[in-house]
Picture 1 (tube, one colour):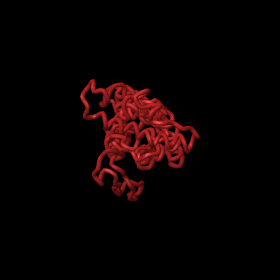
Picture 2 (cartoon, helix red, strand yellow):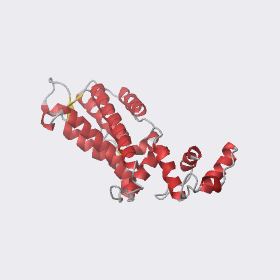
Picture 3 (cartoon, helix red, strand yellow):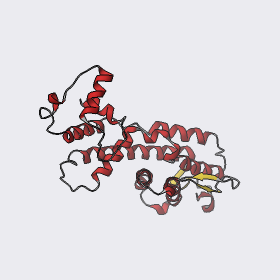
Picture 4 (cartoon, one colour):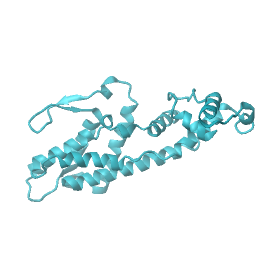
Length: 249
């Protein structure tokens, strides 16, 4: 029932109350896809006291499934992009950093919106208004925190790899280097989470900005704009042979 429940959960239209995750839907799924017959009498008040308890157990089971890792795919995309650019000049390196951030928008990355990731976001929204200790929040908060911790650690590693690839360093006036890199990852991660749940059309719409090497117009989504502003304030081009102006992003 739990296995079939998670399969159904990733197939139905997601809603905050998971209203479509019903006994009947799971029974039908087991019959059609696994040739197994289960009746309500065999589970209701024997294993679960209510359909809602069953739903909560299925959601908990689904949250235990590994979230797709963003690290390899994100870095591969960025490395391929950077490899196509000229890094022999400060201007080229600066554009490589800018382009890495612009292309890092979740709007341009299909692997950033997997069913498992979307489920974690829905559950997070469902938990948001609940008081600590609420029975429906019990056990979920820890799972969501673990997911966010892991994804932020992956994001941090991507930032470090790109800094080495392009030749970037933390600005002397930006504070502790490790904290700076982590803050970039936290902002990048949190901006995606926030904008995914924003209902305003502008939050999902790209702006055309003359950011190309020769002033060409390029599409920027809000998450990338916010992150690039932070990166410019925190990082600079590495190289003591550069002037202060050349080091600025």
